[in-house]
Length: 68
Image (cartoon, rainbow, N blue to C red):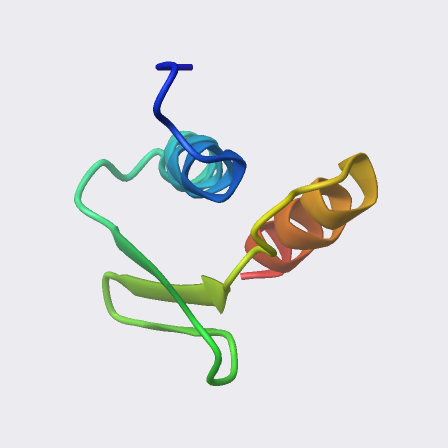
């Protein structure tokens, strides 16, 4: 983690990498937003992690990612 990288940004980066690795699809576009989660073609939408990410928050985020 770069010293200036926020915990939220780190969570987004590693979750995006995990989604692409599990799906074996480097062409996926992973976005984070407040709207509902889902998949449309090569676009995966996940919930925005909180600013300060706890282990429980990461578990929920990975659960949402794995469910897609």
